[in-house]
Image (cartoon, rainbow, N blue to C red; front, side, top):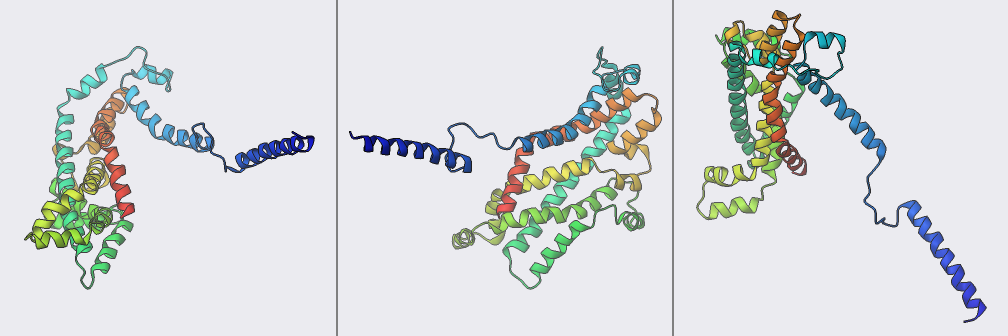
Length: 304
């Protein structure tokens, strides 16, 4: 091998290393290490998680403390742990009555919104008629008007219909205000169902109603589950409408029960925290168990 070839090989090696550094610098070469992403994103994500989780943990742990512990060290852990606060709340008959009322309202609202929402969404998504787009735009516009904006005329209408101080006066308005969100989620699901599938079902002798029950509902089940979970949690945490509609304590839901319990035991902070943590625990467990279905349903709605 001549000196010229050795020199050329050396230059080529240096140039190759230089090109490798250049490609690595500009992201052209794939690294064998697992990419962890931008640390700044993780930093702000941890901050957001802490903002959401820390208050919940403070309420739960606060129920295991005494008032003296909370006063001396508000941010400390229970030392020793006190279970009596939770026992007193569980033995309170008012808590179980409010729990039953909240379950009735949340389940009825969830079923009503899902049943009506999927029927309306099926008509908007699968039937092409004059005014279908306007109907969908009308329901979409309903997202811009929260219940708090119309709470006063809504209460007057509920009172005139004789539904004041009843759970039905809460369920029906919540169904009405929950339909826009449900329709916005379900319409893309139903539009993504191939038209050839519907034609094949009709050729096999299946009616439109049969196609709806046998094909549409099973295929749209991720979106249906998403809407049902969101409506259940939203109804469980509803406070404004029950505050206006309900006046008797035996009809109170848990959010009103927490407010009443806090007023009656304003000096007993530990017991109030125990009552609050037990009131939010069912919705928290329900949301945690089905959170994957929520993410999957919203992802399908965006793709559709």
